[in-house]
Image 1 (cartoon, protein in one colour):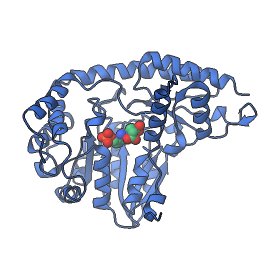
Image 2: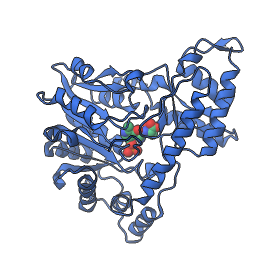
Image 3: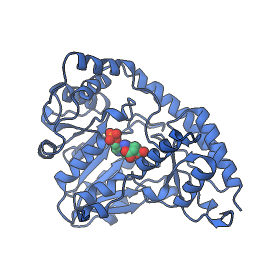
Image 4: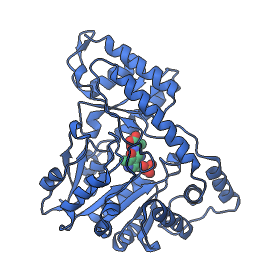
Length: 397
Ligand code: PMP
Ligand code: GLU
């Protein structure tokens, strides 16, 4: 059957594909340990669930305004003020079906064919394809492990052309966990200040920061950037609400109105019940976030230590998010039963087949020397899973 050419230009989301594969193997009875899914293993907090149940019981089950209820927009505005010091009007907020949907709508709203979006690599799998689906051109800027996987101002400067429309900054980052300090963000802002370029600030891992500096984005450190920054965030990660599908954008009115218009012709409003739950997440007790983040930090320390004990594996200690991105190139060239492992895809296939451990190949994030493990899983799974990886790698010669 003939399909639109755009379908062939993108790949399915590898993070989701691997998670689905691991779950299918588990359903068949295989004892697979999953480091694939980038989602908290914690349950959605009870106060949030109760708000959703109440929404159903109250009959809050009809269409809402396309871009979200005023109540939720107010909760988002209060959050942005409280956590980030930003003042926004209601007309500067739009709620979508997850931050991925927000980013998709944003690309649709901003890009004409050939418009360029600068994406630092390693990048979250969906950024380039979301740009491609909007007929834009992803411009990948490689960052180096020795720089903590952070884009340097000179690298940003070198990537800018007359077609550059936007830059994506995701801090803390998926998949590396890299987090930009306020000073590093200021240096990037200095490159952009005299240029007509937007910043898409994906702050979804804002709460998962273990560094010794506070969370900041480019508009907090350089207020002159606020009118050119679109803050993207959501409740999936901070409140263990991945399935509820609520994300949002805050930014210039014209862009928000454009997203609203686009959304009115695709999903309409995000689920009314999820919106009520998100209001409770943002306005309710925030202790749960601190508890979860404390757990992630413990797990990070352990997984980094265990991975670094494996011959051929080198793992930086990430400053945020809940991923590690070990360099596994020391294993490339070794063989199992005569079959050589030469890249991240072959390695993750081997680890799944031999060790029953699901990981994501670095190639999906633009770096074939690495693999990604999500440590949003129990300490028991981390210890057992990394032991299995160690044993499987020890079998290679
Ligand atoms: N941005 C990044 C960097 C992510 O890792 C994710 C993970 N899903 C998202 C955005 C989207 O999150 P969601 O659609 O669940 O809000
Ligand atoms: N963002 C998460 C991840 O990278 C969830 C899956 C997805 O949306 O890509 O694993």
